[in-house]
Length: 191
Image 1 (cartoon, helix red, strand yellow):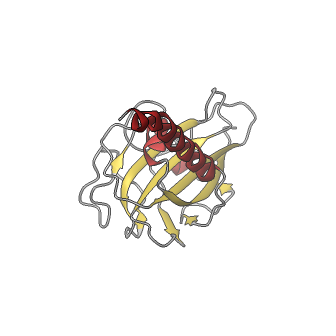
Image 2 (cartoon, one colour):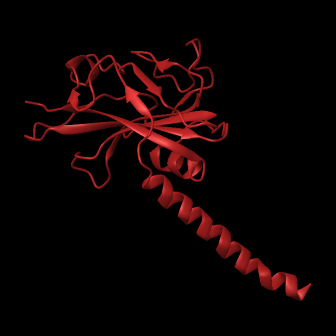
């Protein structure tokens, strides 16, 4: 029995190393998923309608080229140019079925998405205001063109994550399950 117990620290170290390697691989993964919107083109200007200065409705999003074995999707929208220590988080969504065709424009901000074709089970996580759902661009009038990253993650399992996750908690929960990623970037500047 004593010999078996001496292997436990070694096994824990191996498991921890695997988690760290998976995290690094996911962070350095080349974008292979195509993420698009009818609202704006990649690197295009986000129309006022989709900002918190306008109607604050979420844009329509689609994805294609999902990797084989994709079971679920997750989404994070953030602004890395925001004058905060971390990118400001505008939207966190997860438990998105892989066979969903899109997220339609003006999606509900309810925690649990119901009654939307293909999105049953989707959860709106917590944005940077600690509220569920989409919060559109609202940069300060700082003379900077802000970038809004809509990043989609393809996952290898139906994780069925609980309500109330923020970006950090979501990324921790999907660590080791990311098969591929893709990003749509929109820009907005308050003039």
